Length: 335
Image 1 (cartoon, one colour):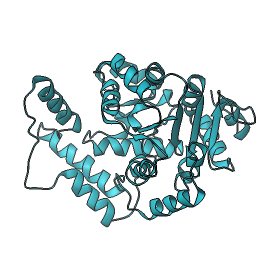
Image 2: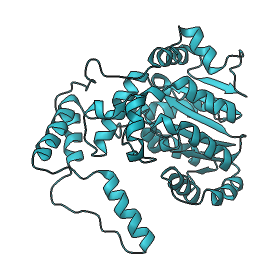
Image 3: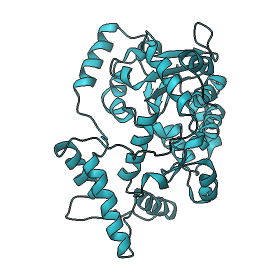
């Protein structure tokens, strides 16, 4: 069995990659977990470089594997369809797609906070863009990067349908049910006691890649305004990645920045963990796209699933519902 956990990001993906998936491999439920050459090649393809054709025989050679990488889905919903097509070309349709999701408004807030983690500091209205504004800046938005997203393209029903139409099996898991790990049994044949032990350890494990608190967001935005007043800006993670890639392509050693002081990201992480606990909220009236009612209805349908997940086989649930029909059952759709 070949399984691709493609995202969504900000749904405990890093915690699953650290605390759960390696133990599946150790238990031999998974033959290969994130096989290095294939995994790195896919990551390069997401970022717009690398030879996609070279990945096809690598994928065919894997008989039982799990790849978990939240960037495979793509952060920007405009890129969801090209990403699904890329995975179909590389792996074919006979794979299982695992997608972990969260409440749509909470997801967009967390995505903005993740952008700040990458040291790309701008206010929410410069990141969550309506379609007409997004089109005007599209040439500055880089594949695989959290530069800005088109929130009018953010349609979870459409995203689920893209994968359901292309792949034989799609498993959708709402955020609130990830900790139970019941979805593992929808994919792999593993003993219930092993799964339950994994779940207990997963829930008890420290969280990784946690979001900035409200205080950390305020300080980060304030720092950037102060730098801008001096004609300066912070260096983003993309700057480091560009220099690293250039070094690799030129065959020269990459020398990362070194400082005796802790990074801003580390300081804000400590503040978020040990400082004021108030969670960050997007400003009142922040534009979250034209599909939010349908997104909310679809997510409510996932949460209502008695198994803790929804599995689509050949595009439909066991009761014959498509993703669009699931949203319609849960509530009125928003076109």
